[in-house]
Image 1 (cartoon, rainbow, N blue to C red):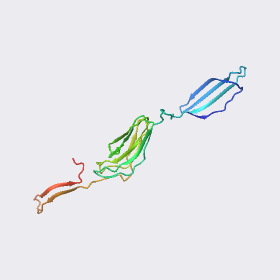
Image 2 (cartoon, rainbow, N blue to C red):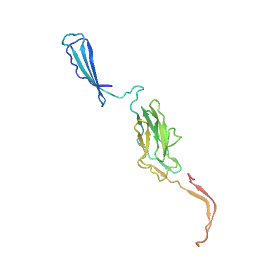
Image 3 (cartoon, helix red, strand yellow):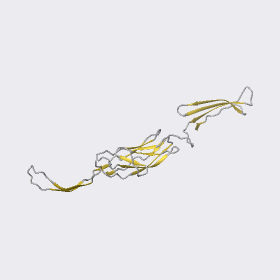
Image 4 (tube, one colour):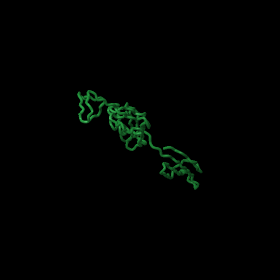
Length: 218
């Protein structure tokens, strides 16, 4: 609590002061008005000395140990472009994330086509940073998945950092340049037999087909 202003104090007689009344008014916008009136206990004459003073105080959130303030999440603003070829995960980018005064764990959620990890190895659609005594922090690894669609949209996508009671924070991918290119496919091992073109003779092949570049086949 912070004292903003102490008005002048007016009194007539001197001597030991005992307080007669206190008035406390709390305003909705975070201020307190405290008014105190005292009597001069040593003077019993008709001219009783009085002091009447007021103090205006501001209510501020507590910050001491065990008294959390507003939950806050911090993370990077943007990423560099992610580029990969279908079948191979993009190189991961890492970001420091943290939260203070939290009442729940810090959750990172990936947009479509992306995955993330807190250990740089175990990737998934979400990652959780466990809060202890209101704090959570760590390094978030983000990358395009190996099977992200070539036709997908990966620019200006939000990686969301959230925790119950805290305002969410977005790490936004670059506005351009995020891309998944198609992987080349080669078929070998087959030889076609020559035939005259007569519209009726069936073409034939010999050998066994071998594929190179085929991924995620079903």
